[in-house]
Image (cartoon, rainbow, N blue to C red; front, side, top):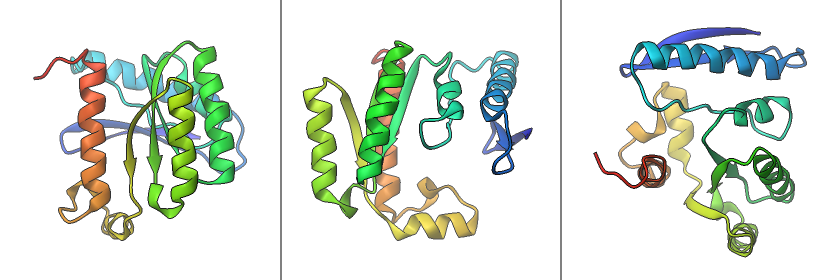
Length: 175
């Protein structure tokens, strides 16, 4: 795969492109992380956000490596519940702090309730729930981040989650 350095709203963005079925996806994540660290040091940025691949394979494990905090995004489906349990096991193996977000929670409220209950029973923080929102698709088609869509319920939820996450990783200190 190949990796790139771009800018988005004055924020450096290190990203990669991996051909489906191509080997060394974990290695590519490691290279992207290394470049992101170099860029962060050069630009004196304190936070690096790594958006890992969905699932529980090598790219996810590589994304967790070196992280100080992991935000796991769960889908309220049978396979989503299974993947969540496995990724939480992996996060705990690496002894990382973490929290959970439920994406499209309202598509299956029973499964979402199960995830909430499971998080509570396991002492896992639920940072928020993002509703299904057709504005996400519209934003994607327009090449805009969904948070730029003012009438988006998903954007509002993401902004609330981002605020909670920011407080969490900054130790509760407000800027």
